Image 1 (spheres, rainbow, N blue to C red):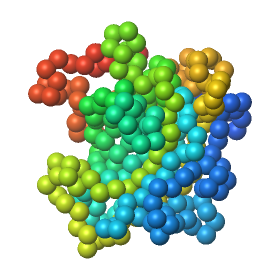
Image 2: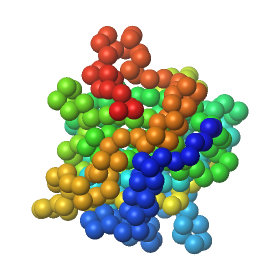
Image 3: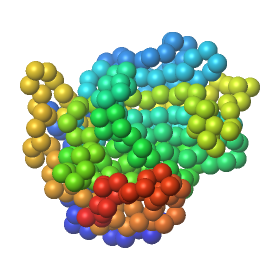
Length: 299
């Protein structure tokens, strides 16, 4: 990838991010034992940690899937984890890192998704991202990756504020979802969200539209997580600090409303080389292009 010298905007963004990682008034940085911050939703046999507690292993087999959720919900901020995906024959297996306004993913939920779609041995993973507002989705994009995500940990992050949602892979922005405001109202900005991770059986749709089913002889399937960062505004009733948008936090400030000059270069590189599907370009599915599709990610 071509790398240019950072602009002043890049320096401001980096400085803001680094400052946020070390100090924040109403934000919460995840640290400490798993039990302090998350609740798991699977049998104990399917959730393991490394000896030092820093790596979390989620298992899928024919007995159960596995997932976990933050004990707190958040509105706006930076949400990030390092993840190593299932290797080998992973067709039909989906590993997810996502945010949702409702614990049970109810019909009127808001949601921001990273979903990693497994494949047959030797075929690349696809990353599917999606955005839901008030129970409606249909904003899928799919990307290839420029590395093998099963060989090592890579960082997957979401920046969410009232102006944009940006999906990052190893600090490279792969998708920018702008707020269309009054023109379309399809932007999840009002409800706080919990942060989830999971591994589950999605062989009815995930690989070649459901044609490739899970090969259970390859089970168990194990996804590995570490280094969670939730630098975000924690929602606390009855008067949450983040009920209204201010410029108190770095993600609510001007430099987080737009991509920096370097991020624009990286984003354009991804668009040229790794986009597999974009709902904005799907004229069969969408007779009329959704309003947010007219917004430029580079503005």
